[in-house]
Image (cartoon, rainbow, N blue to C red; front, side, top):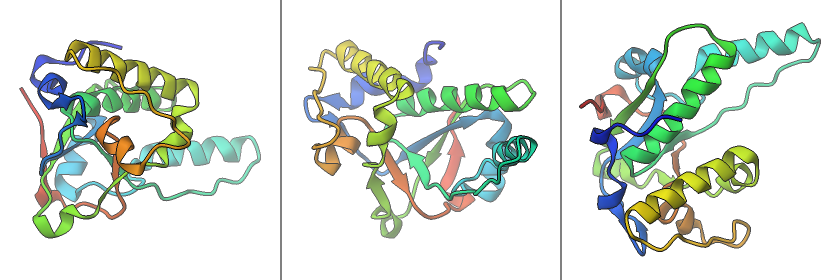
Amino acid sequence: MSSTPSYLQDARVLLSSDGFKTGDVWYHGTSSALISSILEHGLKRSGDKAMKQAAKKTMATIGNSYTESIEPIFLTQSKELAYYWAEQAVRNRSIRLEGDESPAVVAVRLPEDLQNGVKPDVGAASLLMVKEGEQFLAFVSGLYEAAGQPVPSIDLMKADRLEYLNKLGMAYYNTDIDAQYISEVTA
């Protein structure tokens, strides 16, 4: 993984012993290949149609059926964490799709009446128990260390829901987000 571009490095400012500060702006990491669609159509739950189609094609090739699940939109309060997830999106897309893609981050500015729709992502517990999750936890630990904050110790099975949001920066929104609330984060 590459290092996070300086204009996205916000963990030192956001982190305290209580975790990541939360404001009224959320971030979503994605691929540069999806930016124009996101800016035009918004963020859609399970929105990467090309990846869904590739998975469906692969399953048909090996004779299995494919049942598409609807995933929420994953958000974080940190541009730095969003960039981490953007790198994962680009890596995952590069396995199934051809093209020159790079990590990209969008800002989501929901109006006050929609802010309550952002929820701590406790479903991330299952992710955090596999190799990819271990890598994420190591990345987050590095952010805490760089910010001079104690690295949180979280029992993933017993953690309070807010720990996933505050300590790990993991949130979701279970409704499509209109394009009017989204902008690309650039240098």
